[in-house]
Amino acid sequence: MSAPTHTPPHPATGRGAETRLPWWALLLPALAFAALLLLILNPADAHAAGADPVVGSLFERIQQIVLRQES
Image 1 (tube, rainbow, N blue to C red):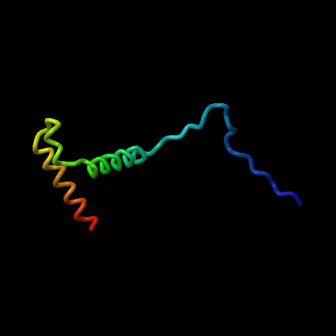
Image 2: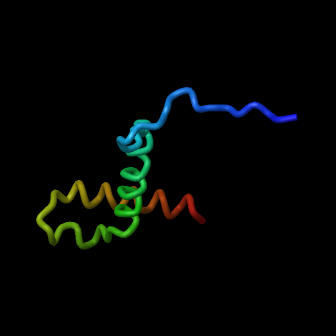
Image 3: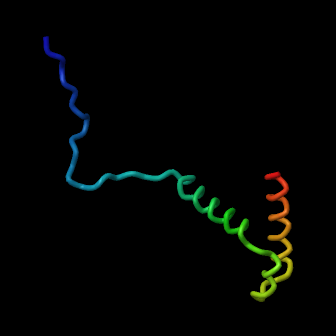
């Protein structure tokens, strides 16, 4: 007794695969990169680049919060 074979509903074409990424597939790597960048920034050197002192203190505060949650 032979089993029936199943054919795909749409035949394959010669073009490449057409896939679409969901919005979060692009957002998550960008957020991970930003989080890692914030972790390695040294807020004490932020003023040497001519940045606003508020930005340096903001980075310092974020780093303190992140490091406090890891302990």
